[in-house]
Image (tube, rainbow, N blue to C red):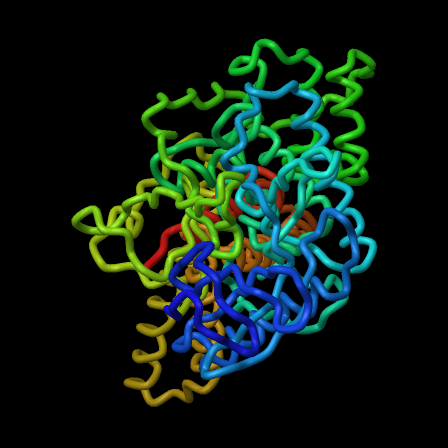
Length: 512
């Protein structure tokens, strides 16, 4: 860490605003203009990493394209003495994670969220998705010079230009914060502006309620909440709010993104109408799970403030640094370095960005919450496995017959071809069944192919036996055809898809 008062890249460092595993943010004096900036430095060990360097520089490039009063400005960037740095707008105030909505009128919170929504829609119009909207990334600037407090969106560190051809995170990794991540982010699907809307609705819920909508002691339960649990009713925690607010939040947090509002601004406009009694009932949002909403934990579980990126550790109006209390998840109660923490979730993915010590409870967290039904997938996987075993029985029989032919001096070339074909079928069908039972998308596809092939063979059998008037064989092959058709239906059903996506998201949430 550099000392206060030291010079760096022409700036004079005044004091530390915040520090994390990736770097440090300083309050610095501009070398030529009479103003202060927030100078964000990436630690030297990370500055040498080319991918992280591109990601850090990308934050400056992305925000430099945007000119909006509710988006933190970027003034300059560079490299000096082994450090990568970004000079950003200095915002005097706090952040939404420390916001006490009960101390203000509900409309004030709605206005701040509305300003953030305007920033998100503006960024989207310029082809930029934020992808990590959460309270810690919304700064609340102090009121001054006759201007009300206002929201400023910051930390575009994992933002992505919607038309970009490059992806700075490795395939299959996930870098948003679980407590505010959309179902499509957790499922590894392509995201659009409606994902930021979902995260903004989670942020609104947290600002009003004091905690995120899905709270749990392990990440598996949080993932289950976003993927399969109904949206909790905010009015059970804030009965002072109009009941119509619940419907607005439920629509913005719909599991299917095409059921959400058309834009973040539309969402916040309808929210304000609901608060002011002008709300028209929003369309009913379908929910894939109808169990009980998660219970609200006690105040002790929410005693800690989120641990956010150092760029968001701004000083408060009293001039002191807003220091968060880190959540201890490592062995011995120690906070593991390198993790950017947030309540009930942390960014995951790049192991160079997050070094978790072995043995911590986060590594093998049990899956909690309601899991989507796996009955259809298990039925398909089990029957497909039985098909594979049946083919394997024919394979064994063929091998014994071939060996007998060899002993009798007959040419076994035709039998070898049949054995090869049966071996491929056994391997394909068996692998598909096992992969499906392990909740892999490839297993779902392979099982569908197997069922289609079995159905075609059965259909030919039905036609042939019917023409030969062998009715017992006709009935048997017809039954196999019906079973194959059922397998295709069950494998392709939304129920199977939801279960596979759920398991995929849970696997992604188990950090190693």
